[in-house]
Image (cartoon, rainbow over all chains, first blue to last red):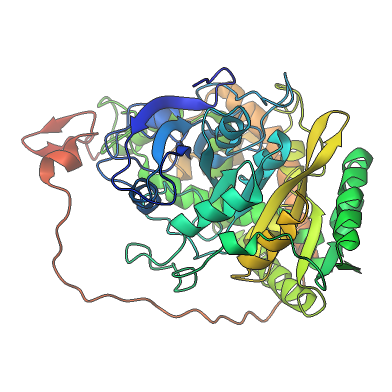
Length: 424
Length: 92
């Protein structure tokens, strides 16, 4: 096993608890998913020594299905980033693009699969964090419909947006892993009956004959031309296999990125308030009073991007600004949802490039946070609308992997797996 | 915030609300970055008011006693404990 690209924060061996569809398979688990007795850091100094007393539901399901967990995968700190460079444990290098980022925030998960340090991986996706690194590393990644997969044991960043999902070399293996983790959980009240008896693996049959693919015009137009060319090849391939292609324009999508960041930061400011250094995490010492000690714990435990988001989220929720930012962002979210619902009247699945750019060089994009946020433009609308989406490799541009994003209606994972498998 | 520029006081005020101590250099960088980011967020002004339909229902469970972590497990990750309790800083 190799972690020459810094894919793992902690190497480990968690043995299967029974035989199942994943017997003999190794898997990397993103380090914000709790593993009993194995430290779970969220890529943060704050949790460098934190050892969860219980397993996440998905971890129980993996080991019960026969999988062996071989590593806790590197990630942007608390999931906040798109390049895995905000990790307190150093960046993950892209195994398929030396010197370039692996994407993020689940960069370690995608890199582990790309470099074959693990057969499969779990990531989490709040605004693209599964699809982005899958695209950059040339592997498959799926963000499930909100509520399909239990978040019990996932250390929260933005609860209303995030889902745990599979990363694998092929669409079929992605579907098999989704079959294992999907379905209701009494420990997560937001999970849904859907997925209880699903057979996603059977859907990956490559048959798109008669399917209507709606190309999201705004998102294709915003992409680097080399990315757009590879994407167009993918569209042509689907058409050649019997799919009908239509163009779709969504006005609301122009506001999705701003809405996403306001909501994600606001939820983060509330979620991360739990890190006070008393029950777990870096202690703020006993010199000052309660407030001073908490502020000190958070100054030493959190990196700069995490602080930036907590502060901006606090600002967006503070008196006088709540209506201007948070309430408008919720309006935009509802608008995006409505427009997606309407789009599915005219298409079975929607398509766009997963990432508008090719993987940046390590160190290239850290100085300007707003510029870094912009690379999430094509992935965040899906999280706002609670929809499922998959990124599938679609050739290369200048030698770098390019991802093709397929978006389905709520609980329409079968459709995007079917369409995605036609691209392989 | 686009109307009123982000100044150092504003950054320190939200840092204080969020209980995050900042170094001087962090506070300076944040001042400029927040200006840019909040300007960008101002584009939300163009979003029309949307009637939000929700098909969500509350999911309840009976309020019954259930097993939980034992005391030692719960205290295991704390920096300091005393007599079976978490040890926190003084309140004032």
